[in-house]
Length: 481
Ligand code: GLC
Picture (cartoon, helix red, strand yellow):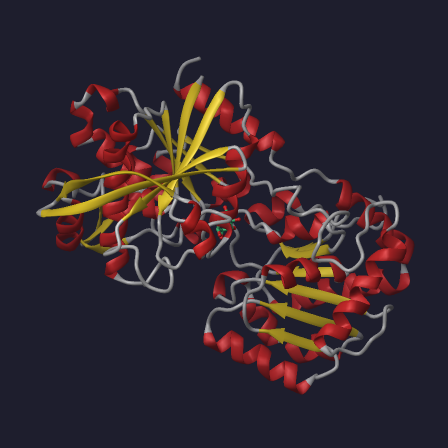
Protein backbone atom coordinates (compact mmCIF):
# COMPACT_ATOMS: atom_id res chain seq x y z
CA UNK A 1 0.00 0.00 0.00
CA UNK A 2 1.40 3.37 -1.02
CA UNK A 3 0.72 6.16 1.42
CA UNK A 4 0.01 9.66 0.18
CA UNK A 5 -0.74 12.80 2.19
CA UNK A 6 -2.45 15.79 0.60
CA UNK A 7 -1.56 19.06 2.35
CA UNK A 8 -3.88 21.90 1.46
CA UNK A 9 -5.11 25.18 2.94
CA UNK A 10 -8.66 24.49 1.80
CA UNK A 11 -10.77 21.47 0.97
CA UNK A 12 -14.46 20.85 0.26
CA UNK A 13 -16.80 20.34 2.03
CA UNK A 14 -15.01 21.86 5.03
CA UNK A 15 -13.70 25.17 3.72
CA UNK A 16 -13.58 26.75 0.29
CA UNK A 17 -12.53 30.00 -1.33
CA UNK A 18 -11.77 28.66 -4.82
CA UNK A 19 -11.11 25.73 -7.12
CA UNK A 20 -8.23 24.46 -5.00
CA UNK A 21 -10.78 23.32 -2.42
CA UNK A 22 -12.73 21.35 -5.02
CA UNK A 23 -9.60 19.54 -6.14
CA UNK A 24 -8.33 18.79 -2.63
CA UNK A 25 -11.75 17.44 -1.67
CA UNK A 26 -12.69 15.44 -4.75
CA UNK A 27 -9.43 13.97 -6.07
CA UNK A 28 -8.48 11.87 -2.98
CA UNK A 29 -11.68 9.83 -3.41
CA UNK A 30 -10.67 8.80 -6.92
CA UNK A 31 -7.50 6.81 -6.28
CA UNK A 32 -7.41 3.05 -6.47
CA UNK A 33 -8.15 2.19 -2.83
CA UNK A 34 -6.39 -1.18 -2.98
CA UNK A 35 -3.08 0.45 -3.78
CA UNK A 36 -3.17 3.98 -2.41
CA UNK A 37 -3.99 5.17 1.08
CA UNK A 38 -4.61 8.87 0.44
CA UNK A 39 -5.24 11.13 3.43
CA UNK A 40 -5.69 14.88 3.65
CA UNK A 41 -4.42 17.43 6.17
CA UNK A 42 -5.66 21.00 6.46
CA UNK A 43 -6.04 23.70 9.09
CA UNK A 44 -9.00 23.74 11.43
CA UNK A 45 -10.33 27.24 10.87
CA UNK A 46 -12.58 28.96 13.33
CA UNK A 47 -14.78 29.99 10.38
CA UNK A 48 -15.59 26.38 9.43
CA UNK A 49 -19.25 25.43 9.83
CA UNK A 50 -20.18 24.11 13.28
CA UNK A 51 -21.51 20.89 11.80
CA UNK A 52 -17.99 19.96 10.68
CA UNK A 53 -16.22 21.13 13.81
CA UNK A 54 -18.59 19.04 15.93
CA UNK A 55 -17.63 15.88 14.07
CA UNK A 56 -13.88 16.29 14.47
CA UNK A 57 -12.28 14.08 17.09
CA UNK A 58 -9.39 15.26 19.18
CA UNK A 59 -6.29 13.09 18.67
CA UNK A 60 -3.53 14.80 20.60
CA UNK A 61 -1.56 18.02 20.92
CA UNK A 62 2.04 19.11 21.41
CA UNK A 63 4.19 22.22 21.33
CA UNK A 64 6.37 22.88 18.30
CA UNK A 65 9.41 25.12 17.94
CA UNK A 66 9.42 27.26 14.83
CA UNK A 67 11.98 30.04 14.51
CA UNK A 68 12.12 31.58 18.03
CA UNK A 69 8.48 30.70 18.75
CA UNK A 70 6.95 27.76 20.50
CA UNK A 71 3.42 27.07 19.30
CA UNK A 72 0.54 24.82 20.20
CA UNK A 73 -0.29 22.18 17.59
CA UNK A 74 -3.58 20.37 18.10
CA UNK A 75 -4.52 17.44 15.88
CA UNK A 76 -8.07 16.42 15.12
CA UNK A 77 -9.35 13.82 12.76
CA UNK A 78 -12.45 12.80 10.89
CA UNK A 79 -13.47 10.15 8.38
CA UNK A 80 -15.58 11.51 5.59
CA UNK A 81 -16.78 9.64 2.52
CA UNK A 82 -14.12 7.01 3.06
CA UNK A 83 -11.22 9.47 3.38
CA UNK A 84 -9.18 10.14 6.51
CA UNK A 85 -8.86 13.87 7.19
CA UNK A 86 -6.56 15.50 9.74
CA UNK A 87 -6.97 19.04 10.97
CA UNK A 88 -4.26 21.20 12.52
CA UNK A 89 -5.66 23.25 15.37
CA UNK A 90 -4.22 26.53 16.59
CA UNK A 91 -6.70 29.21 17.57
CA UNK A 92 -4.10 31.96 17.42
CA UNK A 93 -3.41 31.39 13.71
CA UNK A 94 -6.64 29.97 12.36
CA UNK A 95 -9.09 32.49 13.80
CA UNK A 96 -11.07 35.15 11.94
CA UNK A 97 -13.97 35.16 9.52
CA UNK A 98 -12.01 33.82 6.51
CA UNK A 99 -9.11 31.42 5.91
CA UNK A 100 -6.93 34.19 4.49
CA UNK A 101 -6.61 37.67 5.92
CA UNK A 102 -4.28 38.97 3.23
CA UNK A 103 -0.83 40.32 4.02
CA UNK A 104 1.96 39.08 6.14
CA UNK A 105 -0.16 37.38 8.76
CA UNK A 106 -0.98 34.69 6.18
CA UNK A 107 2.72 34.06 5.67
CA UNK A 108 3.32 33.46 9.35
CA UNK A 109 0.21 31.29 9.51
CA UNK A 110 1.24 29.00 6.64
CA UNK A 111 4.85 28.71 7.74
CA UNK A 112 3.36 27.40 10.96
CA UNK A 113 0.96 25.10 9.11
CA UNK A 114 3.69 23.67 6.85
CA UNK A 115 5.97 22.85 9.74
CA UNK A 116 3.10 21.55 11.84
CA UNK A 117 2.09 19.12 9.07
CA UNK A 118 5.51 17.46 9.19
CA UNK A 119 5.80 17.59 12.96
CA UNK A 120 2.41 15.94 13.36
CA UNK A 121 3.22 12.87 11.26
CA UNK A 122 5.32 10.86 13.73
CA UNK A 123 2.82 11.76 16.44
CA UNK A 124 -0.15 10.36 14.54
CA UNK A 125 1.93 7.48 13.22
CA UNK A 126 1.27 8.10 9.55
CA UNK A 127 4.39 7.93 7.40
CA UNK A 128 3.46 8.94 3.86
CA UNK A 129 5.63 7.91 0.92
CA UNK A 130 4.65 11.10 -0.85
CA UNK A 131 3.45 14.45 0.49
CA UNK A 132 1.42 16.16 -2.17
CA UNK A 133 1.49 19.91 -1.54
CA UNK A 134 -0.98 22.35 -3.05
CA UNK A 135 -0.17 26.00 -3.80
CA UNK A 136 2.04 28.49 -1.99
CA UNK A 137 0.49 27.90 1.43
CA UNK A 138 2.27 24.55 1.56
CA UNK A 139 5.36 25.60 -0.40
CA UNK A 140 7.63 25.35 2.64
CA UNK A 141 6.87 21.66 3.18
CA UNK A 142 9.31 20.40 0.48
CA UNK A 143 11.89 22.83 1.87
CA UNK A 144 11.51 21.69 5.49
CA UNK A 145 11.64 18.08 4.31
CA UNK A 146 15.11 18.65 2.89
CA UNK A 147 16.14 20.79 5.86
CA UNK A 148 15.78 19.92 9.54
CA UNK A 149 13.49 16.92 9.04
CA UNK A 150 15.96 15.23 6.73
CA UNK A 151 18.08 14.19 9.68
CA UNK A 152 15.41 11.83 10.95
CA UNK A 153 14.94 8.40 9.45
CA UNK A 154 11.17 8.83 9.53
CA UNK A 155 11.37 11.57 6.90
CA UNK A 156 14.51 10.69 4.97
CA UNK A 157 12.91 8.91 2.01
CA UNK A 158 9.71 10.91 1.92
CA UNK A 159 9.06 12.44 -1.49
CA UNK A 160 7.15 15.60 -2.22
CA UNK A 161 5.01 16.82 -5.10
CA UNK A 162 4.19 20.49 -5.53
CA UNK A 163 1.03 21.30 -7.49
CA UNK A 164 0.55 24.82 -8.79
CA UNK A 165 -3.12 25.73 -8.98
CA UNK A 166 -2.40 29.36 -9.72
CA UNK A 167 1.08 30.77 -10.20
CA UNK A 168 -0.13 34.29 -9.52
CA UNK A 169 -0.18 33.61 -5.80
CA UNK A 170 3.27 32.81 -4.46
CA UNK A 171 3.48 33.86 -0.82
CA UNK A 172 6.07 36.62 -0.94
CA UNK A 173 7.46 38.99 1.70
CA UNK A 174 10.84 40.53 2.47
CA UNK A 175 13.62 38.08 3.27
CA UNK A 176 14.00 39.14 6.89
CA UNK A 177 10.33 38.55 7.63
CA UNK A 178 10.30 35.20 5.84
CA UNK A 179 13.37 34.10 7.76
CA UNK A 180 11.73 35.14 10.98
CA UNK A 181 8.51 33.24 10.18
CA UNK A 182 10.10 30.12 8.78
CA UNK A 183 13.23 29.79 10.86
CA UNK A 184 15.15 28.83 7.72
CA UNK A 185 18.83 29.76 7.62
CA UNK A 186 20.64 32.16 5.27
CA UNK A 187 21.58 29.20 3.13
CA UNK A 188 18.05 29.10 1.66
CA UNK A 189 17.92 32.76 0.71
CA UNK A 190 19.90 32.80 -2.49
CA UNK A 191 18.30 33.35 -5.89
CA UNK A 192 18.47 29.66 -6.83
CA UNK A 193 16.39 28.79 -3.76
CA UNK A 194 13.79 30.88 -1.90
CA UNK A 195 15.05 34.34 -2.78
CA UNK A 196 13.36 36.42 -5.44
CA UNK A 197 15.26 39.75 -5.53
CA UNK A 198 14.75 41.14 -2.01
CA UNK A 199 11.93 38.80 -1.16
CA UNK A 200 11.48 35.32 0.17
CA UNK A 201 9.04 33.25 -1.86
CA UNK A 202 7.26 30.16 -0.46
CA UNK A 203 6.06 28.77 -3.77
CA UNK A 204 9.49 29.18 -5.28
CA UNK A 205 10.87 27.13 -2.40
CA UNK A 206 8.31 24.43 -3.09
CA UNK A 207 9.10 24.36 -6.80
CA UNK A 208 12.85 24.21 -6.22
CA UNK A 209 12.74 21.48 -3.56
CA UNK A 210 9.83 19.26 -4.58
CA UNK A 211 10.68 15.98 -6.29
CA UNK A 212 8.01 16.64 -8.90
CA UNK A 213 6.06 19.73 -9.86
CA UNK A 214 2.68 19.63 -11.50
CA UNK A 215 0.10 22.09 -12.62
CA UNK A 216 -3.52 21.63 -13.51
CA UNK A 217 -3.54 21.47 -17.33
CA UNK A 218 -0.94 20.74 -20.00
CA UNK A 219 -1.39 24.07 -21.73
CA UNK A 220 -0.79 25.97 -18.48
CA UNK A 221 2.31 23.82 -17.87
CA UNK A 222 3.69 25.20 -21.15
CA UNK A 223 2.40 28.74 -20.67
CA UNK A 224 4.14 29.26 -17.34
CA UNK A 225 7.51 28.77 -19.02
CA UNK A 226 6.91 32.08 -20.82
CA UNK A 227 7.22 35.58 -19.33
CA UNK A 228 3.58 36.48 -20.02
CA UNK A 229 2.21 33.70 -17.82
CA UNK A 230 5.28 32.98 -15.70
CA UNK A 231 4.62 35.60 -12.99
CA UNK A 232 8.36 36.17 -12.67
CA UNK A 233 9.09 32.44 -12.27
CA UNK A 234 9.17 31.47 -15.95
CA UNK A 235 12.96 30.99 -15.80
CA UNK A 236 12.56 28.60 -12.88
CA UNK A 237 9.75 26.77 -14.65
CA UNK A 238 12.00 26.28 -17.67
CA UNK A 239 14.81 25.12 -15.42
CA UNK A 240 12.47 22.63 -13.75
CA UNK A 241 10.79 21.53 -16.98
CA UNK A 242 12.02 17.95 -16.62
CA UNK A 243 10.21 17.68 -13.31
CA UNK A 244 7.14 19.62 -14.48
CA UNK A 245 3.97 18.11 -15.90
CA UNK A 246 0.38 19.20 -16.47
CA UNK A 247 -2.47 16.99 -15.28
CA UNK A 248 -5.89 18.35 -16.03
CA UNK A 249 -8.41 18.64 -13.19
CA UNK A 250 -11.67 16.76 -13.11
CA UNK A 251 -14.86 17.41 -11.18
CA UNK A 252 -16.94 15.22 -8.90
CA UNK A 253 -19.50 13.60 -11.22
CA UNK A 254 -21.77 12.74 -8.31
CA UNK A 255 -21.96 16.29 -6.99
CA UNK A 256 -22.39 17.65 -10.50
CA UNK A 257 -25.01 15.49 -12.14
CA UNK A 258 -28.00 17.10 -13.86
CA UNK A 259 -30.04 13.91 -13.62
CA UNK A 260 -29.88 13.75 -9.81
CA UNK A 261 -29.01 17.32 -8.73
CA UNK A 262 -31.38 18.30 -5.91
CA UNK A 263 -30.89 21.98 -6.59
CA UNK A 264 -32.66 21.69 -9.93
CA UNK A 265 -36.43 21.85 -10.19
CA UNK A 266 -36.25 19.63 -13.26
CA UNK A 267 -33.62 16.96 -13.58
CA UNK A 268 -32.51 16.04 -17.05
CA UNK A 269 -30.03 13.94 -18.96
CA UNK A 270 -28.61 13.66 -22.43
CA UNK A 271 -31.82 11.98 -23.67
CA UNK A 272 -34.38 14.50 -22.50
CA UNK A 273 -32.54 17.82 -22.11
CA UNK A 274 -34.35 19.29 -25.14
CA UNK A 275 -37.62 19.28 -23.22
CA UNK A 276 -36.48 19.46 -19.60
CA UNK A 277 -33.51 21.82 -19.42
CA UNK A 278 -35.52 24.88 -20.50
CA UNK A 279 -37.91 24.32 -17.60
CA UNK A 280 -35.02 25.17 -15.33
CA UNK A 281 -34.51 28.34 -17.32
CA UNK A 282 -38.10 29.36 -16.71
CA UNK A 283 -37.75 28.55 -13.00
CA UNK A 284 -34.63 30.68 -12.75
CA UNK A 285 -36.19 33.55 -14.71
CA UNK A 286 -39.02 33.57 -12.18
CA UNK A 287 -36.71 33.30 -9.21
CA UNK A 288 -34.48 36.16 -10.37
CA UNK A 289 -37.23 38.41 -11.74
CA UNK A 290 -36.17 38.18 -15.37
CA UNK A 291 -38.55 38.19 -18.29
CA UNK A 292 -40.04 34.70 -18.57
CA UNK A 293 -39.37 33.26 -22.01
CA UNK A 294 -38.02 29.77 -22.49
CA UNK A 295 -36.80 30.60 -25.99
CA UNK A 296 -34.52 33.42 -24.98
CA UNK A 297 -30.84 32.51 -24.87
CA UNK A 298 -29.50 32.72 -21.32
CA UNK A 299 -25.79 33.15 -20.64
CA UNK A 300 -24.32 32.45 -17.19
CA UNK A 301 -21.24 33.62 -15.31
CA UNK A 302 -20.18 32.03 -12.03
CA UNK A 303 -16.83 33.36 -10.97
CA UNK A 304 -14.58 35.25 -8.63
CA UNK A 305 -14.95 38.79 -10.00
CA UNK A 306 -11.26 39.51 -10.59
CA UNK A 307 -9.04 40.61 -13.46
CA UNK A 308 -7.89 37.01 -14.04
CA UNK A 309 -11.33 36.07 -15.27
CA UNK A 310 -11.50 38.60 -18.11
CA UNK A 311 -14.05 41.01 -16.68
CA UNK A 312 -12.37 44.02 -18.22
CA UNK A 313 -13.25 42.56 -21.64
CA UNK A 314 -16.85 42.12 -20.56
CA UNK A 315 -16.97 45.64 -19.12
CA UNK A 316 -15.76 47.05 -22.43
CA UNK A 317 -18.66 45.62 -24.48
CA UNK A 318 -21.28 45.12 -21.79
CA UNK A 319 -23.79 47.49 -23.44
CA UNK A 320 -23.50 45.65 -26.74
CA UNK A 321 -23.93 42.25 -25.06
CA UNK A 322 -26.93 43.45 -23.10
CA UNK A 323 -28.67 44.95 -26.09
CA UNK A 324 -28.58 41.60 -27.90
CA UNK A 325 -31.51 39.22 -27.60
CA UNK A 326 -30.12 37.41 -24.55
CA UNK A 327 -30.30 37.24 -20.78
CA UNK A 328 -27.23 37.36 -18.56
CA UNK A 329 -27.03 35.86 -15.07
CA UNK A 330 -24.00 36.59 -12.89
CA UNK A 331 -23.04 34.98 -9.58
CA UNK A 332 -19.97 35.77 -7.53
CA UNK A 333 -18.04 38.30 -5.48
CA UNK A 334 -14.68 39.97 -5.89
CA UNK A 335 -13.23 43.34 -6.87
CA UNK A 336 -15.57 46.22 -6.03
CA UNK A 337 -15.24 47.69 -9.53
CA UNK A 338 -16.69 44.53 -11.10
CA UNK A 339 -19.32 44.02 -8.42
CA UNK A 340 -20.52 47.57 -9.04
CA UNK A 341 -20.28 47.25 -12.80
CA UNK A 342 -22.67 44.29 -12.73
CA UNK A 343 -25.00 45.98 -10.23
CA UNK A 344 -25.20 48.93 -12.59
CA UNK A 345 -26.13 46.80 -15.62
CA UNK A 346 -28.61 44.83 -13.55
CA UNK A 347 -30.32 48.17 -12.87
CA UNK A 348 -30.00 49.38 -16.45
CA UNK A 349 -31.25 46.17 -18.10
CA UNK A 350 -33.63 45.07 -15.42
CA UNK A 351 -35.42 42.38 -17.43
CA UNK A 352 -32.40 40.78 -19.01
CA UNK A 353 -29.52 41.06 -16.52
CA UNK A 354 -29.41 39.55 -13.03
CA UNK A 355 -26.35 40.31 -10.91
CA UNK A 356 -26.10 38.17 -7.79
CA UNK A 357 -23.17 39.58 -5.87
CA UNK A 358 -22.70 36.84 -3.28
CA UNK A 359 -21.83 33.19 -3.40
CA UNK A 360 -24.30 30.36 -3.20
CA UNK A 361 -23.56 26.79 -4.13
CA UNK A 362 -27.26 26.10 -4.75
CA UNK A 363 -27.65 29.05 -7.11
CA UNK A 364 -24.51 28.06 -9.00
CA UNK A 365 -26.04 24.65 -9.73
CA UNK A 366 -29.27 26.31 -10.86
CA UNK A 367 -27.31 28.52 -13.24
CA UNK A 368 -25.50 25.53 -14.77
CA UNK A 369 -28.85 23.77 -15.03
CA UNK A 370 -30.74 26.70 -16.56
CA UNK A 371 -28.38 28.55 -18.90
CA UNK A 372 -27.73 27.81 -22.55
CA UNK A 373 -24.18 29.13 -22.56
CA UNK A 374 -21.50 29.99 -20.00
CA UNK A 375 -19.05 32.87 -20.44
CA UNK A 376 -15.45 32.55 -19.21
CA UNK A 377 -13.05 34.81 -21.16
CA UNK A 378 -10.10 34.45 -18.74
CA UNK A 379 -6.81 36.28 -19.17
CA UNK A 380 -5.20 33.14 -17.80
CA UNK A 381 -6.75 29.97 -16.40
CA UNK A 382 -4.61 27.20 -14.90
CA UNK A 383 -7.48 24.77 -15.34
CA UNK A 384 -10.87 26.26 -14.61
CA UNK A 385 -13.60 24.08 -13.16
CA UNK A 386 -16.79 25.95 -14.00
CA UNK A 387 -16.45 25.24 -17.72
CA UNK A 388 -16.31 21.53 -16.78
CA UNK A 389 -19.44 21.89 -14.69
CA UNK A 390 -21.10 23.72 -17.59
CA UNK A 391 -20.21 20.98 -20.06
CA UNK A 392 -21.65 18.39 -17.73
CA UNK A 393 -24.93 20.36 -17.60
CA UNK A 394 -25.04 20.92 -21.37
CA UNK A 395 -24.40 24.63 -20.94
CA UNK A 396 -22.01 25.47 -23.75
CA UNK A 397 -18.88 27.33 -22.64
CA UNK A 398 -17.70 30.47 -24.45
CA UNK A 399 -14.05 30.75 -23.45
CA UNK A 400 -10.70 32.25 -24.32
CA UNK A 401 -8.16 29.72 -25.52
CA UNK A 402 -5.85 29.71 -22.53
CA UNK A 403 -4.71 27.11 -19.99
CA UNK A 404 -7.27 24.50 -19.09
CA UNK A 405 -9.99 26.26 -21.07
CA UNK A 406 -8.08 25.45 -24.23
CA UNK A 407 -7.58 21.84 -23.14
CA UNK A 408 -11.17 21.12 -22.17
CA UNK A 409 -13.43 23.07 -24.55
CA UNK A 410 -13.35 21.99 -28.16
CA UNK A 411 -14.43 24.91 -30.38
CA UNK A 412 -17.46 24.46 -32.60
CA UNK A 413 -16.69 23.67 -36.21
CA UNK A 414 -19.88 24.26 -38.19
CA UNK A 415 -18.57 22.40 -41.26
CA UNK A 416 -17.40 19.26 -39.55
CA UNK A 417 -20.12 19.40 -36.90
CA UNK A 418 -17.69 18.98 -34.04
CA UNK A 419 -17.03 20.84 -30.83
CA UNK A 420 -18.44 21.38 -27.36
CA UNK A 421 -18.37 25.17 -27.09
CA UNK A 422 -17.02 28.41 -28.53
CA UNK A 423 -13.60 29.98 -28.16
CA UNK A 424 -11.43 32.88 -29.25
CA UNK A 425 -7.68 33.35 -29.14
CA UNK A 426 -6.73 36.94 -28.38
CA UNK A 427 -7.44 38.89 -25.25
CA UNK A 428 -9.59 41.37 -27.10
CA UNK A 429 -13.10 42.54 -26.23
CA UNK A 430 -14.39 42.56 -29.79
CA UNK A 431 -13.02 39.14 -30.54
CA UNK A 432 -14.96 37.97 -27.49
CA UNK A 433 -18.08 39.85 -28.61
CA UNK A 434 -17.89 38.31 -32.08
CA UNK A 435 -17.64 34.87 -30.51
CA UNK A 436 -20.62 35.51 -28.24
CA UNK A 437 -22.59 36.66 -31.30
CA UNK A 438 -21.53 33.58 -33.24
CA UNK A 439 -22.88 31.51 -30.37
CA UNK A 440 -26.13 33.52 -30.41
CA UNK A 441 -26.52 32.97 -34.14
CA UNK A 442 -25.93 29.24 -33.74
CA UNK A 443 -28.43 29.08 -30.90
CA UNK A 444 -31.20 30.93 -32.74
CA UNK A 445 -30.61 29.83 -36.32
CA UNK A 446 -29.05 26.38 -36.11
CA UNK A 447 -30.85 24.81 -33.22
CA UNK A 448 -30.19 21.24 -34.35
CA UNK A 449 -26.47 21.88 -34.46
CA UNK A 450 -26.66 23.55 -31.08
CA UNK A 451 -28.45 20.59 -29.54
CA UNK A 452 -25.97 18.15 -31.05
CA UNK A 453 -23.26 20.16 -29.42
CA UNK A 454 -25.09 19.98 -26.08
CA UNK A 455 -25.13 16.19 -26.51
CA UNK A 456 -21.39 16.11 -27.11
CA UNK A 457 -20.76 18.42 -24.16
CA UNK A 458 -22.85 16.30 -21.82
CA UNK A 459 -21.14 13.07 -22.84
CA UNK A 460 -17.56 14.41 -22.74
CA UNK A 461 -15.84 12.85 -19.72
CA UNK A 462 -14.20 15.21 -17.24
CA UNK A 463 -14.60 13.06 -14.19
CA UNK A 464 -11.39 12.37 -12.23
CA UNK A 465 -10.74 8.84 -13.54
CA UNK A 466 -8.08 9.52 -16.16
CA UNK A 467 -6.30 12.23 -14.21
CA UNK A 468 -6.24 10.25 -10.97
CA UNK A 469 -4.44 7.45 -12.90
CA UNK A 470 -1.88 10.04 -14.03
CA UNK A 471 -1.21 11.12 -10.45
CA UNK A 472 -0.84 7.44 -9.50
CA UNK A 473 1.77 7.05 -12.24
CA UNK A 474 3.56 10.13 -11.03
CA UNK A 475 3.71 8.80 -7.45
CA UNK A 476 4.85 5.38 -8.72
CA UNK A 477 7.60 7.05 -10.73
CA UNK A 478 8.89 8.84 -7.64
CA UNK A 479 8.79 5.63 -5.62
CA UNK A 480 10.44 3.65 -8.46
CA UNK A 481 7.75 1.04 -8.57
C1 GLC B 1 -7.23 27.90 -9.19
C2 GLC B 1 -7.15 28.26 -10.68
C3 GLC B 1 -8.17 27.46 -11.50
C4 GLC B 1 -8.06 25.97 -11.16
C5 GLC B 1 -8.19 25.77 -9.65
C6 GLC B 1 -8.07 24.32 -9.24
O1 GLC B 1 -8.40 28.40 -8.63
O2 GLC B 1 -7.37 29.66 -10.87
O3 GLC B 1 -7.94 27.64 -12.88
O4 GLC B 1 -9.08 25.26 -11.82
O5 GLC B 1 -7.18 26.50 -8.99
O6 GLC B 1 -6.89 23.72 -9.68
